[in-house]
Length: 68
Image (cartoon, rainbow, N blue to C red; front, side, top):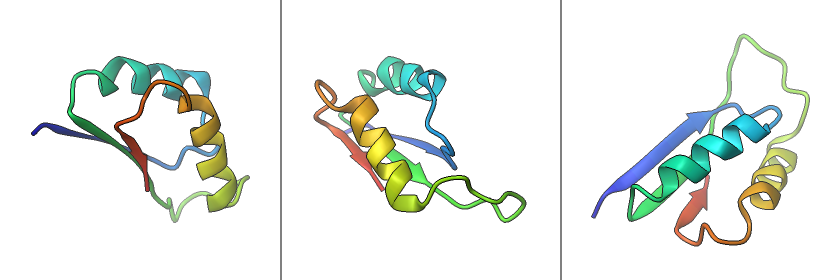
């Protein structure tokens, strides 16, 4: 099983990020989007808001994509 991981702060999650997810998710059996902190930046959005943004952007077709 091939697992892909895409890490970032995703603050905000942009159409560019969504494009990377769409292009890469099909190359793996599972694809994980991992939201991480950056101690050098102050986030504009809370973690839960970022998870909601990512869910909204990838909802509908990327069933093997997990957001953590």
